[in-house]
Length: 368
Length: 131
Image (cartoon, rainbow over all chains, first blue to last red):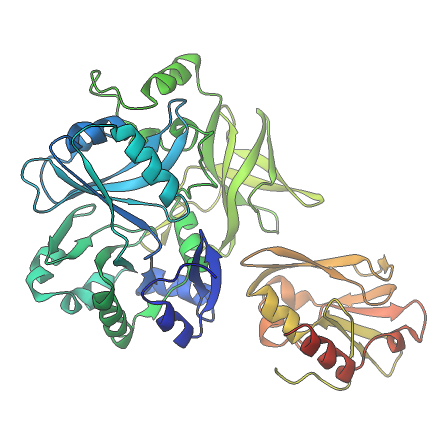
């Protein structure tokens, strides 16, 4: 028996097929993963993402602490109510986890942040965060009692704006991408993991149950982890543990853009290792693959390129493109074409730059 | 449990076999199998004319989740494959016993199908496995 979110009963009542995910009982789908995927691309869907780990960081030392902990620089959060995507690294430059760090809406002095990290890595992350904090003046608090929903899709915000607390309507609708607002324990950010517009909402559990019911009553379909995975893959968004882990650096995981070297005095954990890797020359990179032959690419399959071999890190069927797509780690010099070893066959695939799909549109359909 | 057709024979691996009047057999996967697999997105079938030994992994069905082999419940020569599955693998989900058939075989030996379970035995096997 895994941990249950505040919405567990809703999932069962909706006929969800439940699976274990990082120690949580989560909905895989509510009948059709493919229909749920299309609903998010064409209209809107609601996800229970309460398994994600919400960690609040406060205290006079929190800014300096996060500048050390994270490979991206929280000083880019130039005012309250802003967020950024970052990795936290180990000393060897491997990825401990990826996360979104928000500077809270009430924060005028750069002393209050909210981090949302992955479910499966939550406990390990917390231990790491506390270790890095040492005796600095930071309070690291896992918000165990909150629930988190993601409402995603081209009309997600329009349909659900009126359902969130009245004192946040205007602020929520006015949010720019990656910005956040909050009032009375209700937190809203214009972020997501689907390649569509929408928001992610953190609130008390009872509020989440009421909001879930209201969102469903407004005609938005519930979406499980199955479609969440195909949506993020189409959007070219990495999944921790598959596309990067503690042994791979962000520089070979398509995440170089999230590492900020700008402030030379900022000695974030992993910086030295990444600088050494960069100086030595990167020998791998993360790319997108589009299968040209028939079949489905899967995690772990070998990729053969003219520059050497690599591996599929995430693969599957794209419901939007109606063919198989993948993320793969390949030799840095690999371009254009490769072959993926799918069981007994070598199948041709094109090497492209992700994302494959954003805002309902197919961006990559063949050769680069 | 949805109805398990009485006119078919069943394997322990959840394939079904339909014996035709002309001595050929049609093979597919059962409703229980398609439900366990999830939504199908790709099917790999053998070539017409190919000889398939009994027990051989002769086809692959891939769902949104994973790839699974389909094992031949009996041996024979492939007479035809269900071409419609190339563009519509979901036929296996929507119509496992009819439109979602996989292959038609000329059995290597005429009485092989009789070794397989009838619908009652298959239903009992599912019940005992808690399905």
